[in-house]
Length: 198
Image (cartoon, rainbow, N blue to C red; front, side, top):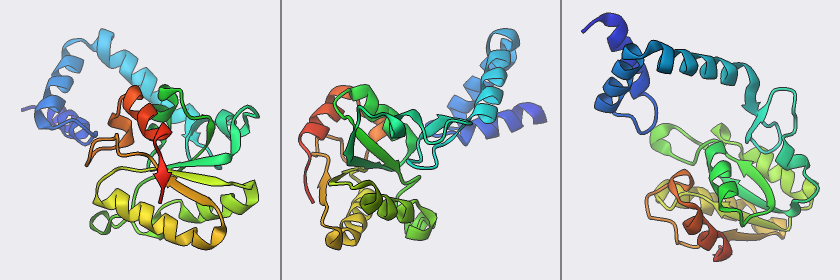
């Protein structure tokens, strides 16, 4: 195989959800239709690289120069309710469900010894600072239902015992060993409405 093609396939296969075969199909499609697929993709990637950043407050996605993000400054959102998620993509998934109207906090991962994700590598310090500063009354843990998500939820709950804040977790309408970003809006709606105390 030509080296540039192989490099493209290897780069694409690093994306979540793309194995070697899917990356190969995507690479060959980009090569075979450069004007229809490759050029718009390159333009979109450049635009995202230049304009999209993480919100300094919630860790979600925002435009450069828009700090904090729109959701963090929206006066119509419940400022006493804080939903903790693993990744910014989880915020988008919950917003699509249309049933949550509080604020967010993205950890940018979950506790995982195998991935070397310790509390120092995630946005826990910012989370624990926000709760008293923002007058948060309830923290909703919208974390994956796998072992690492459970460990992350337990860690947050333990750290908040003395904070006199209600800690709840989404109901287990979410599939086991799955992430928030893979859930459909109806499942997320049921999970948010059926959250329970930790």
